[in-house]
Amino acid sequence: MVYLKLLRPKDWAKNLFLYLPLFFSGDVFNLIKLFDVFEGFVAFCCIASSIYIINDYADIENDRMHPEKRNRPLASGKAKPTIALAISAFLIISGFLIAYHQGNRFFSLVGIYFSLNIAYSFGLKNIPILDIIIIAIGFSLRIRSGGAIAAVEVTIWMNIMVFLLALFMAIGKRRDDVLLTLSSGVNMRKAIEGYTLDFLNTLLALISAVMIVSYFMYTVSDRVIERHETNRLYLTSLFVMAGIMRYLQIIYVNADSGSPTKILYKDRFIQISLLLWMISFYVILYIKKIPYFQ
Image (cartoon, rainbow, N blue to C red; front, side, top):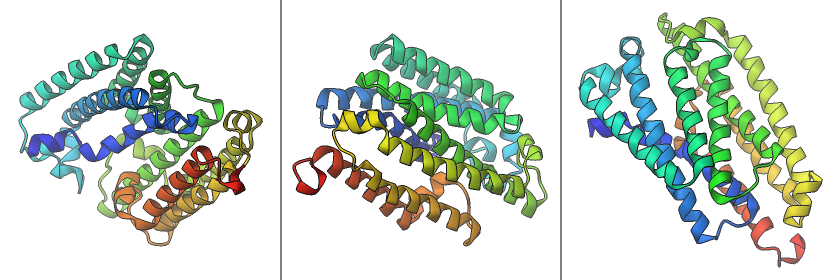
């Protein structure tokens, strides 16, 4: 169980972004493509978990001073570093073997993702602003990888939206780190020195506004309307705005943790907003026989 925690299975949800291009394409019931994307999902889970282990190994001393991270297997001493690194090596080999099976383009994208995150773990995460940009690029690579496997075009607007969403979540996480630093008096990571609460609050407001506008632009773009043969996708914007507003309410009004993963797993309002967004998108894209959507 201790070594399973090293893999951070709760964070595997991030790799579901691989399915977005297939979902947006209107071809989500293609079983062959679904299985291929699932293989890609497994490959990314292996690579991501290997990076989590390497990152935890590199941050053992810093994590021991963190009020939450000190309970991680390596920082707490419950997991042996040699065994952890052996597991990481196995996951790297497994992930790349699966990626190779899915073709050169996917293999290359996984390689870029791995290299970028290794560089992040061993130095780039200490550079303010660049650290959150790298996290956002990781999500962009996920959707590009999903598009490569499913042979689906990833539009510019989809790229922009996912990048902004990931940037938004990364800023929320950094805000959480700043709050922990202010409350404990201990600097949780070097990059925090380049952030203040006011700066991060401004960034959250800016990115959330741009993200909503970008989503509207995507839903009403001529190319999207032509491809999906409907101009009703803008209706799904309601649930996007609801989810973003709820997230901002949690961190500003409720003064709760800004960790996006934690919020996604525990907040019913955001879960329902996400579910309703998926249902509305499904209805508009896949059930076009309903008179209102024709």
